[in-house]
Length: 154
Image (cartoon, rainbow, N blue to C red; front, side, top):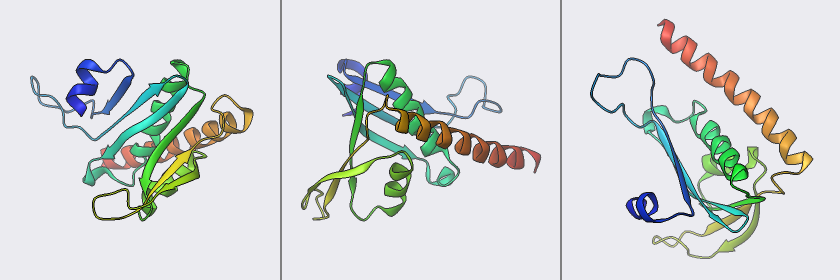
C-alpha cells in the first residue's frame, strides 16, 4: 500500500519524522514516526499514523497529526476522517484532543473481529477547530521542547 501511495497515488500525502542532528553521515536517520492521508475531494482521510515504540508518548504523534492536518488544509481539505480500533485507547485519546468525534462503527472491521470506529472532525477552517489546533500545537511544542531539552542535557 505504501509503495503504491508514494509512487502512484496523487491523492496521497505522507510525512516522516526523523532525528536531525547526530545521524551517521551517508546513512538515512531512523524513522521516529510517519503518517499519511488521502485527499478525496475536500476530505482528508488519515490512512495511517505510527510512532516507533521507543518514541511513543512524547508528543510526536500529536505533532505529526497537526502537520498532516495543516498539509491537508493547504491542499483544500475541509474535514478529516479516520478509522481506529475501538479498543485503542491511546490513539482515541490523541484523536479526541484534535476534535475527532465518533461518526460511525464498522462492526468486526479488523481481522481479529474488533470493531473499528469512524471518526471525523468538525470543519477544519471553523473557529472552534482553529482554536483547538492552536491550543494543541502550543501544548505539544512545549512537551516536545521539555522532552528534547532534557534528553539532550543528559
